[in-house]
Image (cartoon, rainbow, N blue to C red):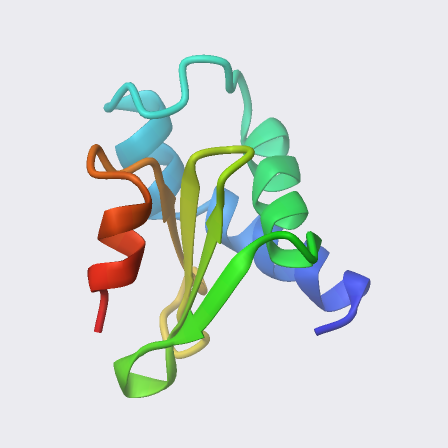
Length: 98
């Protein structure tokens, strides 16, 4: 995916359920103060060559960032293009996804 696509996807995810659930209602990202800041973290994960990525069922794709301790699940079939969260089990959660 090119940078323009990654920015658009990051913006959609950051404006969707992930921001409400994992930033506003949850405490996954205490340092994030706006959807724009959340989008920047997601963009960095999607475009960082150090991020791990793997395909999942139903055409989804998962990205893991050790730097951000964050999982991004890209789901282009969903309205908000996916989600981003910091699972308590960390990278083990990423590895266990199907």
